[in-house]
Amino acid sequence: MAMYESSIKSLPLVSRGKVRDMYAVDDDKLLIVATDRISAFDVVLDDPIPNKGMVLTSLTEFWLEKLGGIMPNHATGILPEEVVAADEIDQVAGRAMVVKKLKPVLVEAVVRGYIIGSGWKDYQENGAICGIHLPKGLDLASELNEPIFTPAAKAEPGKHDENIGFDYMAKLVGDDIAEDIREASIDLYKAASQIAKLKGLIIADTKFEFGLDEQGTLHLMDEVLTPDSSRFWPADQYKEGTNPPSFDKQFVRDWLESQDWDKKPPAPRLPKDVIEKTSQKYKEVLDRFTGKNPYL
Image (tube, rainbow, N blue to C red; front, side, top):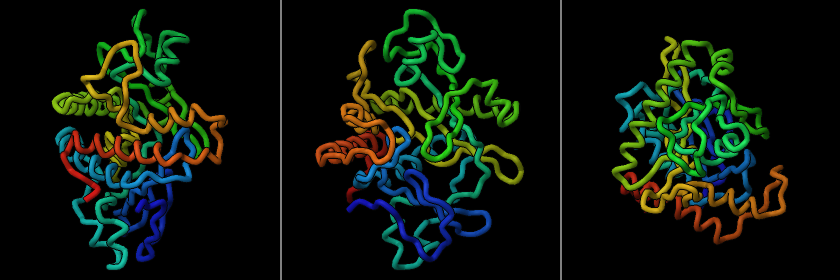
């Protein structure tokens, strides 16, 4: 059974995002429940993807452990089953985390190691991505000499995040925080890419989110290197000049792009086979990285 929305009554609801439901545990901790909702083009679809929330949670926990030496993160180590009522445990088991309450830095920290998606479109138009000029002659899916940091401003609900230059980001969040986020994001991406390489996967790009604690210390937070926030490609099927198959929600985006839809709510209902194939893609990338099976 897929969970479209959680209904925890023992804790105060703080917010519902596109995918995650957030509850207050106490003054300095939150419970984040990853539902099976899926969004595309900033629209939440009516059809959930079974077990998707469990995949997102398991992958985030995997990466927080692997990358913990690079910088602090929001994990507390507290089991979500310990903070809800007994009859609510089934809603949080395997799909929730108890995390530190942080002040979010309202910028999407995007790192690109390959040129694809909106970055490819920008490059074709002006030879640059977010103000970063790239060498001439790059092709679709070309690997960049070095990963680039291309931040995006968080949009209001229902609107699209907007790619911004680093200088504009620095004006939004401050020079020091902007520099720290850029450095941390690239370090995290490089470390994760080495792990992915050993698993036969390529991380084409990803986005990180960061928050500050009361002392002003920067923390990695929210989801980390999941199929919702990253493009994962099988290394043995990668070929420059083509759009490699992805272990992420690109499969859903591609189907939606084939429909007569203006990318405004409501979105078309997903066919059963698209739901099943998307669920399998999420499961496969988790299996590749962790060997865990969220279906058991």
